[in-house]
Amino acid sequence: MDDNNNYLQDDQLDRQAKAWYDQTDDAQPYDAFGSSMRKTEIGNEIYDRIQRNIIYRSKRSFLPLKIAAAVLALIISTMMVYRHFQHPVVPATPTWTTISSGENEVKNVTLPDSSVIRLQGNSTIRYATAFLAGTARHVTLEEGAAFFDVHRDASRPFTVYTKGFRIKVLGTSFNISAYSDRPDFKIDVVSGKIRVEQDGPSGTKILAKGMAQDQCLTVDLASADYKIVQHTNVVNSKIKPVSTIRHLTLQQIARVLGDKYNLFVQLNNPDNDTSTYVVDLGQRSLEGTLKTLTEQTSFSYTIVNGQHLIIQPKTAGHME
Image (cartoon, rainbow, N blue to C red; front, side, top):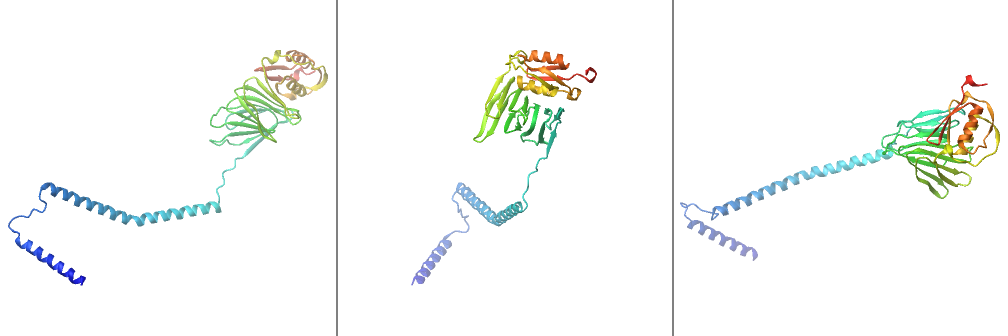
């Protein structure tokens, strides 16, 4: 029944269309748009629909390529991860240089960054053969004493490790005494500033946030007590008398002076004088002690920044 109704409706529409067509005059042009403005609007609409259709079809045509590219990228990433775990890239391990000095030997060491270390007798340092760009500079004073003149480089902090202590600097100069047979640990700042930390059972302890020039840190290794002393004028400073007469070599005298007056003592050419002297170290001042010792041993000396004592033994021609 529905099909018959549809057929009748279609037949009626055909007859109406044919009647409309027959009544039109073919000699007169037919204006389908009514006006030029309407004609322009319809033309623009047709153009927009064609453009949208072209874009839509182009997107659909590139979709398989995009899917293929994504799948390929996933496969490559998976292969790279697999290769990494099968053959992981191990970062280059820096090589280390170890330098030691003999009992009566002083060594000058120039580091890869142009920093200079003066290594005292019976001392050992270890450092990376090449300081890599962008990495911190690490040096280990494994034993003994040394003077550090650090080249300033703000992008690469300089750290000295020794006997559980860490000394952090940027550019400065300082002395460290860390002999295993000494009861204390000492640092003298010649220029600039340093930070001193110590590792202990309860964690890291900050001994000095910013030690400055002419300051000396002394740590008693047995009790862990420490103090920071400001040097005003070491030459004229009064020290408690130590009334004792001892038989000492020049190298032993240098060590005693360093311990007594909180000095960093540099003994040049120690092989020039291996004699033993009977000395009285009971003087109150460093000046008086040095005057007495020069009369007994004929050595000469220089004091730098009030805390760095340089001793020059007598030459072989002056030995008796």
